[in-house]
Structure formats: structure tokens, C-alpha cells
Amino acid sequence: MLILGIDTSCDDTSASVVKDGVDILSNVVSSQAEIHKRYGGIVPELASRRHTENIIPVVERSIVEAGIHISDVDALAVCYGPGLIGSLLVGCCFVKSLGYVLNKPVVTVNHLEGHIYSIFITPTFPSFPFLSLIVSGGHTSIYCVKSHGSYEELGKTRDDAAGEAYDKVSKMLGLGYPGGPVIDKLAMQGNREAINLPVPLMPDTLDFSFSGLKTAVKNTINRFKDDELLGEQVIRDIAAAFQSVVVEVIVKKVQWASRSTGINRIALSGGVAANSGLRKGLLQTAQGEGLEIFLPPKELCTDNGAMIAAAGYQRFSRGDIAGLDFNPKAYLPLSS
Ligand code: KG4
Ligand code: ZN
Image (cartoon, rainbow, N blue to C red; front, side, top):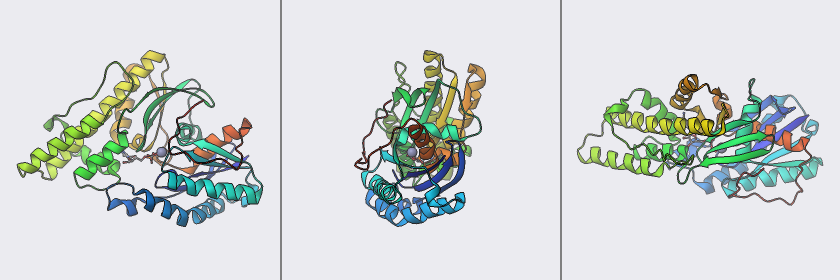
């Protein structure tokens, strides 16, 4: 069974053909990072304009690279939220039109469900139940995934998502957008002990909070600026200290979630799951705690159409087909 999956929820236009929910035949992602870089973050109007230009070429390429004809597709899966409404509208309107013209069923997928399903298109995936940590630019959540389509949220961020904190700290340091990869790289050359930052652990909850950390970084930067000491090595040290705190918090919460549920299988997804410090930290903790960590390759951690196709396959198999009157939603909690 062939599913065409499309995601335009944020700043990447992506389309993919996945066979039987597991086999990626193509996965095309057109990044807009270059456009948004100069603004230090995503400009929603520019993102949706670029999606309108990109959607047809990206889908065409996904079909050609999969070596199929568009009429071979059994169903179309599209991310309908949460995300930027103008961006979501482009993907949803496109899929509705394509579904109507080709007379193919359309399946709608929550973006978070898509991230959870990125683990099912990798060679080794966990058995149910497992914990899914989603750490991206828009979300930082831990879910218990009980079976296909059955999720319980154990914790989520109360303010900034981890990726958002990376992007904002990067902007403060003049390092551009997206902040994650550049801070990740600089952190490896910095001394985390040189900078003192608070660790927002909140011991009684699996929720996260990164906004206080972000403010602490801002105050630290301002102090170095006032003293005219914000040189290259200080920037590396700040990056190292910030990353080490983010990693410490996430790793601890995963550990606690595992202890409180008794579930030791942990899957990662979302752009921040590409972070080398986080991957290393989790793998180290895994050894001591007896955790089994499932890490998708980096290109499946960030937004992509394949994860939408994989989740769409499961929904389609269960007969969960959308009418053509559905609308995208900027705010869309993940429910079972
Ligand atoms: O999942 P994603 O592509 O889009 C959303 O759904 O948000 O995640 C994008 C986020 C950005 O905030 C970016 O800075 C972050 O993922 N990111 C990273 C790394 N690569 C991307 N954060 C930390 N370390 C990385 N290596
Ligand atoms: Zn995402």
C-alpha cells in the first residue's frame, strides 16, 4: 500500500511516498532556513508564501524519486495541525484538491503523531507500550504510546519548547536561525563549567520550563557585553553551559518518566533529537538505568513527509478517512 505524506506545518515543505507504513520510497524536504535566517526566526507570512511556490515541485519530486505514477498512490496523508495556520492551509488545500481530482482517500494526521511515527520507519522500533520524547521547535513533550493511535501525555513544556530556546539563545548570541545545529557545534568547543546557569528541574512534575533558563542566558550575555568580554570563547562556553542544562533536564525527565511508568523503551523525535549532546546523554543514562533508546536518523527527527505517511498508513488501515471538508488547526492537542 502506497501513502503520499505531506507536511507544511512550519517552514519545511515536505512530501514522501511510504510503502506499507514502513518502507520509505522517497522523502523530499525543501528547507526555508535561508529565507528566515536573517530574521532570527520563522516569519509566518513568508513561510506560507514559500510553501505555495514549493508544494507542487516537492510533491512531483517525491513521486518521481519513488519511481511511481501519482495514480499508484492508495491514499494521501496530510498534517493538519498544530502549526502555523497559513503554512498548514497550503498543504491541506493542496491535498484536498489532489484527493478530489484523483478520487483518492485523504487521511489527516496530527503533527505530533507524525513525530511519534518517525520511529516506525527506522529498521528497529520499540514494541508497545513505549515512551516517546518529542523535542522540536514547537514542542517538548513526553507521551506514553500504548498502541497504534493510543497516547497519554505525561509531560509537556509550560512555556518555550527546547528548540525554541535554542533558537532564541542563538539569536541573542548573533548566531542566526536555526539555532540548534550551530549551538550544538559550538558547545563541543566550550567549557560548560565556565558559566553558571540555573537547572530548571521542577522535581514534582514531568513538565518542562525553559523560559527562566533563556532569561538567565540573556542576563549572562548582557553582563559579558557590559564588560566588553563577549568574545568567541565566551560564546562557546555559554553554548556549552546552555546545552548541558537542556540535556540534563531532558535526560532527567526521561529517567523519571521511565521510573514512574515502569516502561524502559524510549523513542526520540523532533529537531532537537538531532542534538549530539542529547543523544550522547541519553545513551549514557540508558546504560546505567537499563533503558532501551530508539533514535531515528537525523533526517527523520526534523519535519518530513515520511513520518506523516507512516502515521497516515495506520489511520488509513483503521478506516479513519477524512471528508474533504476538514480544516487545518493551529492549536491541536494530540488525543487518542
Ligand atoms: O522538528 P523540527 O524540524 O520542527 C518543528 O516541528 O519545530 O524542529 C526544529 C527545531 C529548531 O528549533 C532547531 O533549532 C532544532 O530543532 N534543532 C536542533 C538541532 N537541529 C535542529 N536543536 C538542537 N540541536 C540540534 N542539533
Ligand atoms: Zn515538527
